[in-house]
Length: 114
Image (cartoon, rainbow, N blue to C red; front, side):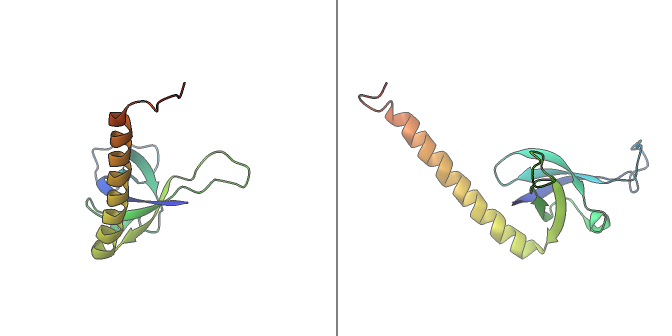
């Protein structure tokens, strides 16, 4: 399973010498399509090219076949136009779901339902 996100900030001890780090790994603060904000590790192959405002694909697949844990890893940086198009579609779906939920809540309880 993969999710689209938008980079808010890149946390890189290699680029920002004020960051004290036990390793050289790079993380990114990502706003996900569903309004979650997460800090995720960035795959080493793309870590150096990641910038705030980039649209990214994150790998949410399980760590292993029986593992309940997810990889939670940024694996792709999308071209801006493609990323924005995908982001917009997911945002439309989120808006549709929020609107449907608000409508259901405004309608009140279902008559005869306990």
